[in-house]
Length: 493
Picture 1 (cartoon, rainbow, N blue to C red):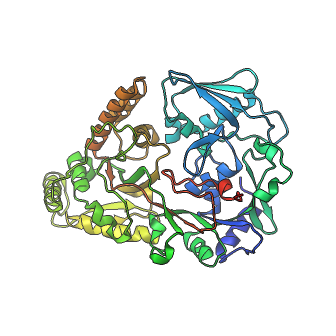
Picture 2: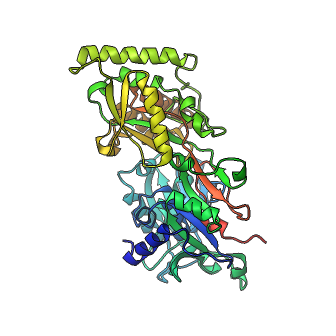
């Protein structure tokens, strides 16, 4: 639970243009979100919450500014030749309560974290972990049922932090100090580093502002924030994107999901051919034209194109068919279905509802999408509640660059909307395959089946933006839109 005093403090900060900033060398970071969503003890984290969790709680490994895996509580590791055993050597040190950091205590903390993710897509990603063993000394072993090339990337996720009683296990501590939230570095020995009498000269504290996107942008514009993290397409329209933003506005080139999840198989959406008609009627490039995002690539695939090791079996749909022909076909399918099954007045447009977040950019996106659907006789309404919507906007960054992440997002066990049990079966069969080339081929078959089911209508890659001053080191755009706060708080030599 978050202390009420802390929540009150954060709410007060969010209502103001700043919580007070001074030239004392501290780094001011604004995280876009609400206190409840960012300062949470849950293992289900928003992107900004992942940034804070990673700063204050450590796992065996972590992600660096480039999105690469680096040591954290484990100082080194080896992987056996068959890829089914990962052996980690813990660094010397103690837990926050002063107890020894042992293999057994680390194993128990990791098992707790894994078990806490059951019922989530990240829990599905972790299914190859068959056993976590405490070995001699400070060594733990993860035994897998099948090779998982991205296991280290998974273990580096903030949700896999090894949390312990008595405090925080990460490189920084979160505290309330003089009316503001502050992240400060732990001494070197507590971070697994050699003792250094002058260590404080190489680091600075972070003043944290948890607030809305407009307030975060205002803090940046007035000089009261050095970094803003957590921007999406929904808030992109309120950011300065002209020549004056050069060098401060940073966009991450991502893998992930950005599209519509079909939530019901009732009425018009019960027919896969009609659902395909909705997908073929969308002009994806036109839908994103107003945002003028350089390098954004549209796709009709549920799995991002260009992933490492993509065998190339699944191609884009309707690549050579003009949008006018696609929309004519979609309108015909809808009309045929209504003449056969619709008991209402088929002279009126059919209505579908879509749920999107509440932000200016999403409102513009909704209007443009509704205009395109109107071309095929669909009247698109904005749902008040996601539970009552026919369609749900999905805007999610991939945790690791593999087809299995994408396919796991639609697993029927998650109950996120319409799904295909046959696809889940193929993914399970692929996971049991130890030959990675054969596995890639089987996952491509699963993707093809998911595509033909039309339970998801892809647009392209998601968008994430940050604002970063030129004086800030340690920030790099990366494929996961994850930017470690401690690296930004280091002072270059």
